[in-house]
Amino acid sequence: MQPNSDLTVDRRGLSGWNTPERRRASFHNLHNIHRRGLIFRAPASLDLVLEQNSAFARLPCLTQLLKEPSFCALVIVQDRRIVFEHQAADFATDKFHSIQSITKTFVHLALGALIESGKVDASRTIGYYVPEAGHAYANASVQQALDMNIATNFKEDYSTPYSPAAELGAPTSYSRQEIAMGWRLPPVGEEEFGVRSFAAGLVTAGQCDDRVSRYTSPNTDMLGWVIERASGHSLAAHVAAIVTKAGLESALQISADCEGVPVLSGGGIMTARDLARYGLFLARHHGSFLADTMSGAGTIYGGSPHLRYRNHLLSNGTWVGHPGYAGQFLMVDPAKNAVAAFFSVLETEYGDRDGYFAEIISVLETALLRLK
Image 1 (cartoon, rainbow, N blue to C red):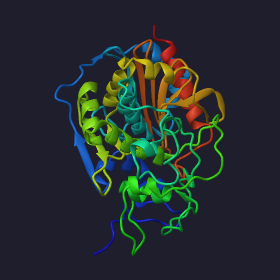
Image 2: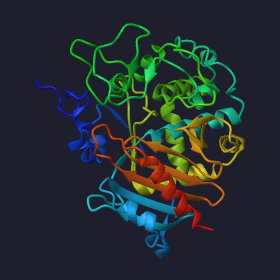
Image 3: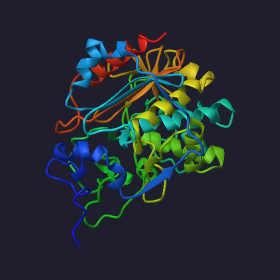
Image 4: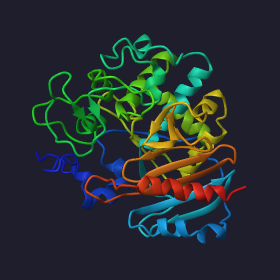
């Protein structure tokens, strides 16, 4: 038998599906590539009415962004009105797209509800809720993980070499996390492992500056474990409840690890319109947790003095949102009940480009400012 070429690794350390020449098609078909997946459907969908506002088409910055070769789709909604919608030639309103790390926002919703109800105290250690949390997380607080404020031996680096498991405490990176997610095969002779055992195997590395984000996807997987233990319900049950309340029209498809755990660190797949519906649910999910998210607390993100990472969301005090690897962004203005859901796929070697997310944020901010 030949190994699956989508899941094997090339000389650059990239999985077959994630090479530049295949990445765009893969982002539109990741639900057919990952080794395991779960599907969630809402019993009823939130109706959206198409009312295109021609003013958006005249915004120069928006027009320029839509001309980018990386562009796939943009949907802007307010209340239940689609005020702007545009897709690339190879995309459509009912086509699926990987949302990558936007999936982390499910933790904001599920854990936020537990914190507001008193079932979780964010100041307590992760080890209090998950005794098996391991060296890096046992004594770190839930809030630290929510704010990406934990220093571990993990680095969110997509260009690191692909190699077998290193000794305990040695530097490790996304190339290992992707095995846990079911997005690449383990090296020959190594058994599979899940996202929780991978996170529990990390160790504390140095002192953490509580003013600077240390973006680490295993934090999300560990918080999913906290959600499960503190609530007494499976993580999948929490995802199902959110999908139901958001009223998604199509399915949410999400990667699952080898133990059946939903990969909230980046495994979500949905349509652009459903990402907008999901954003509307986040917008109307008002409460003390969202207010705290927008308060200016948290860690400085991306070197910008205006952006904070708080409670597993990014915020400038007016909007909340989250980026996704290679070019996804969800921006939500709760006061206006408005959402911008943006899909794109950078086809650079490692799916990044200096200044690209700053450009997306600036354009989406400008667009949402046009709404009253």
